[in-house]
Amino acid sequence: MKRIVKLFLFIIVIYLFLYINNHWIVTTEHVYESEEVPENFDGFRITQVSDLHDAVFGDNQQNLVKKVQKSNPDVIFITGDVIDSNRYDLEQSLDAVRQFVQIAEVYYVIGNHEVATNKVDEIYNVMEEMGVHVMANSSVTLKREEQSISVAGIEDPLNGHDTQSMLNEALSTVNPENLMILLAHRPEQFTTYVENHIDLVFSGHAHGGQVRIPGIGGLAAPGQGFFPKYTAGTYEGGETVMNVSRGLGNSGFPFRIFNLPEIVVVELKSI
Image (cartoon, rainbow, N blue to C red; front, side):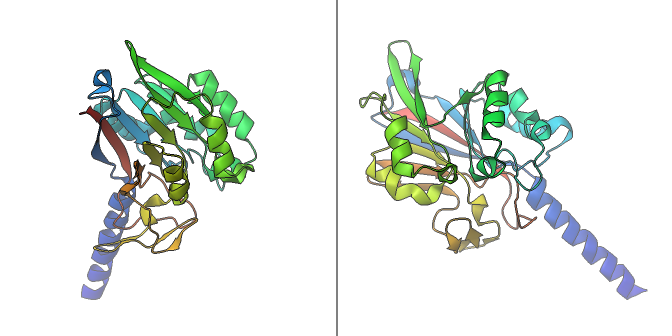
């Protein structure tokens, strides 16, 4: 009887551990401080949502939506893999996005999973109908009075174009005097972002390494293999800072371990 009780308790502990690791959303905050940030954008808050992979966080995604709303964003960046190509359900995937557009302006780039569905045009059309700014190798200018910053976004390379050619297209109309922000799904392309003198990059894709080993980091990431270099947090090279979100959902391996789902908030600070 004692063995049965111990086994039962062990199963409950494992269940709770996995549930928390895969459903407890945390908010990670960073400050990006630079002379390139215009005074009118001092305190400008960017909330990044990445790699939802059709995961569900409460009824009608309320747990996720409340977290994003509480972060008080001026803009929301979605950096790919909103859907999961293994269980494509566009309506469910976009529940949260429909609510995001009521909170702030939303800017979106695709990830490899959108490409893998062969439904990129459908996804783009629905996003645009909701009022999302689709950043398909393009850029926009954000203005506060007479000052401005630039935001560009590139598609995932799986869509058939190399990163450099997509950057050439996206940056072709950017004012070089502006702070340059890039939305790009893949962090393993960091060297290319540095070579193009991007100031601030928002990326995802790595899922935090899926399993995070305390004191070491992520175990594996797509495009980087085992013990990947870019999985979470900020990375600097030249004049470039890259923020990599651990993301929210899973694909392939069904569990995140020591790797809580996260949204990332970056506040711009002028110096």
